[in-house]
Length: 99
Image (tube, rainbow, N blue to C red; front, top):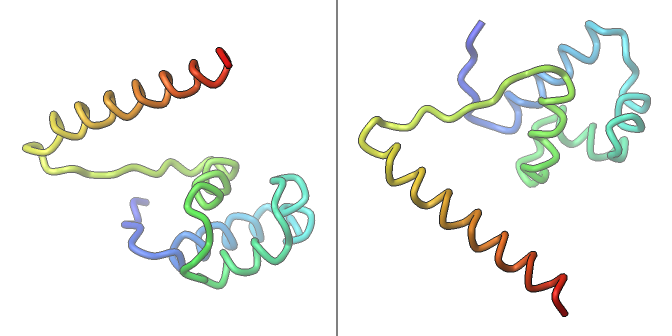
């Protein structure tokens, strides 16, 4: 079932639902996911200030796919910006190793 993700609360509820269905305790899941129990509690309760990268990591660990639906007119501009950003990162990572 497709569920639009519009808040941390919705992501947290999805994670809690799947974790509980799998019979995994919150502290055990936190430990295997490499986050604190407090982070898991904050996420599952929809705390708006949780780190997005960690939220995405939790969703992926549970086998959930997360995506963005861009308007067709924005896709090429998005791809251009993404490529520029990746190129800048690759350049900066390369310069770090050269020092």
